[in-house]
Length: 317
Image 1 (spheres, rainbow, N blue to C red):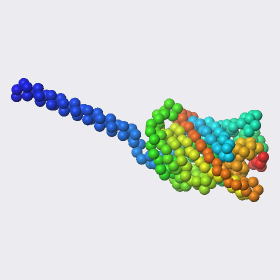
Image 2 (cartoon, rainbow, N blue to C red):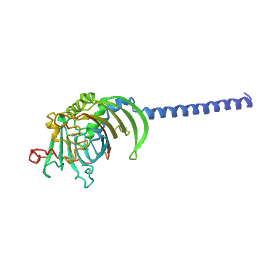
Image 3 (cartoon, rainbow, N blue to C red):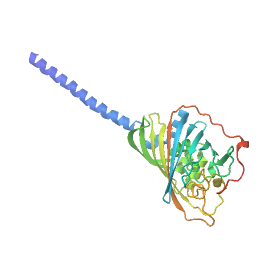
Image 4 (cartoon, rainbow, N blue to C red):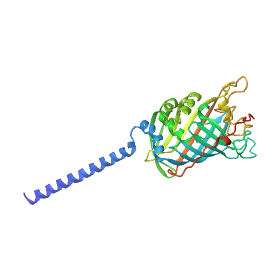
C-alpha cells in the first residue's frame, strides 16, 4: 500500500469515527430529552400513584389556599400546618378573611384532619373557646374538600386516583424544586372507588354533592413522584332548598355565622341549604391550592378527648 493510499484510508476511518460520534451524540441527546420528558410514563398512571408516593414519604408540611367566587363576591382562606400521610392525620391553622366591614380579623381556626372526621377549634358560632367541634366528613355534601376552608392534603392527592385524562405540560420549578407539571381531569366517583378506606366515604359524598363529579386540576410532581403543588377547581350549587342537613349544619361555616354572604356560610356554602322554602340555586366556583414541602418533618397530631368535644347547639347566626 502506497503512502497516499494509507493517508486516504486513515482519513476515511477518522471521518467514519467522527460521523459516528456525531450521530451518537445527536441520538443520545434526542433520547435523553425524550427520556427526560417522558421518563415517568403515561401521565394518567403516574397520577394514579401520586397519593402512594406521599404515603412512602411519610410526612410533610403544607400550605393551603382556597378561593371562592359567587355572585360577584370573592374570598380567600389560607392555612398552614403539617400532615402524616401514613396515619392520615393532619393539623392546620386556617386564617379566615376579614369581616365584610373590614373591622377585624377572625382568630385562626385550628383544624385537625382525620379519616372520616374534621375537628375545629376557635370556630365561633357559640362554641366555647376551649372546645372542639367534630364533624363526620361523609355527612358533608362536599366530603370536606371545601367546607373546612382547606382541602385535606391526602384527600387532595386521592382525588388524583380518579384521573381520567391528563397531559404532561413540561418541566418547571415550585419553591426552588424541579418538578413536572401535569394537567387533567379527575372523576370523584372513580377516585372514591379506588381511595383508601379512610377517604372513600368522603370522596363518595363529594361525588354526589358537587355540581359535577369531574374535577379539573393542575399538579406538580418532583422526581420522586411526590406532589409539591396541586390545584383543584371545584363547582357546586348552593341554595339546595329546605332540607335537614344536620351534619352539614354542624360545620356550616368555619367563619363568623353572621357573615351570611360568605360562600362558606352554612346558608350559602357547600354544607348549606336554602332558606325556608328554598332559594334559587347559585353556582359557586372554588379553586383549592395545596403546597407540600419539607418531607419527613416531625408530625404529632393528638385528637381531642371526648370531654373536649362540644355537644351543644351551633349558633345559626
